[in-house]
Image 1 (cartoon, helix red, strand yellow):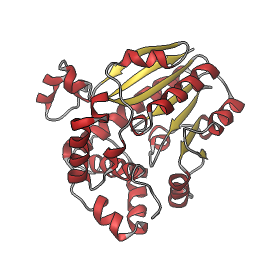
Image 2 (cartoon, rainbow, N blue to C red):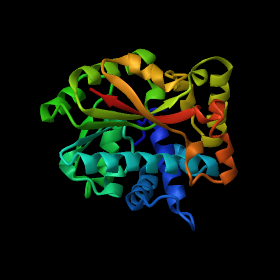
Image 3 (cartoon, one colour):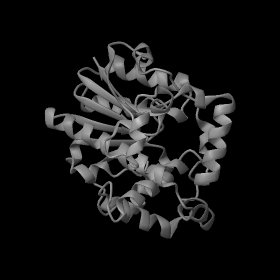
Length: 279
């Protein structure tokens, strides 16, 4: 596991945050497979990566955010599968996500796509219980979508949690264009970042904050951002923004005083989730 790129280090940070929220006296999320995965991972990571990321104290606010974000995408996924028993869930840049086990999804209804080093690591660590399909390919390539379309071209839920902000804007537009031209009656639920964090002083501040709090410079790779969710509708044909969710809008946010910021767009639209219909 010593060949993970700095961007893929965010996958380590994400599972660490989610497990931290699951192991509290009053857990925000249940994630037994995540706990198992992290314990196995800790035994195999090189010392430098283990000390720099896994052993670093993490801000509680970040683990809260990651847990509530995961729960929100869990709810979108559960709702989709309940309404579409033959639907297919495709997780883009899935990293070390454990949604498959948290929701008890049928193996033939779930697929993950991620870079080969991440897929290889996950298979090695969870090979005894990993029963669904994984595609080891960059989301910027064409093969993964072609493989999905061989299975079905409708009733698909595409998830992108903590992914698109690390891609070039042209790459994100290409993904939207490819999906929107190929599928129908489908959904995309994605996390987006505000455009201000992709350039200038705001980006420099983000980099320093991530290095200080998380031990990773992955923030330097923030390239894609938007200012309003409606911008996504111009990225392809037959796209419509249906819903938005911000961490500050969640009823479980702690401390609850943070709810006061839900109507302050400058904060509530820093990083947020957008649900988009396709076709």
